[in-house]
Amino acid sequence: MKVLDVLLDLLFPPRCPFCDRLLGLEERLLCPRCQARLPWTREGEREFRVEFAARCVAPLWYQDLVRDSFLRYKFHGRRDQAGAYASLMSQCVLDRLWDEGPELVAYVPLSARRRRARGFDQVELMARVMARELGLPLAPVLRKVRHTPPQSGLRDPARRRANVLGAFAMARGAQVEGRRVLLVDDVVTTGATLGECARVLGSAGAAKVVCVALARAGQDGRE
Image: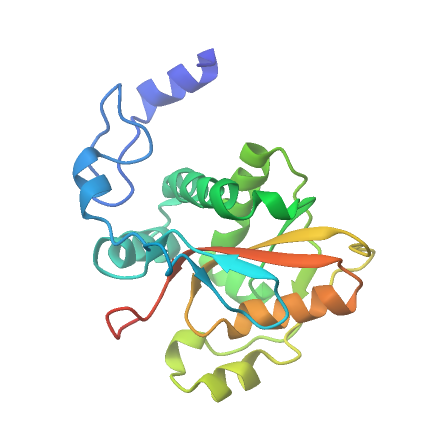
């Protein structure tokens, strides 16, 4: 472990992102109790279909501990939780998507208005850590060109698709032609947002788009 990491752990002791308990010296990412209690996606649930993407995966269901934890991260400034989320997603990519040969990491961006209000882009932060862990370049190739109501407020899949249609575009000067892109998001329900971003990347010439999200919504009927 690097000296800087040791000093940071002394100043800001790592906590389990799901129950907020201080982690012991031998504990990494999350505590043993949460490891056993989390709603992990099982075989047959981990991969799901998204339009315009080759394959998509998520390690968790968005419920209970996961939902509570992510709301702290997203709305209460708990940016320290991003590293653990990113590591869980990176492991899922290595287990399920690495054979697709991703060449760069992109992410679903917030609108400028929402980023200003929140103070940070929660998906960008996770994607930045993932890129470092996977040894891939982070490529902010997408931008959100139209502010949209939150997808969580829309239940109908058709309305979700309409809400994000045309909301994303390629960033100025971005190049993905012939590249295999790993696209990162936080929580996926119908996959409308991921699908629209994958469509934009494909239209720009991406050879393949594979996706990873932290969690899937919907197993318990809630989001």
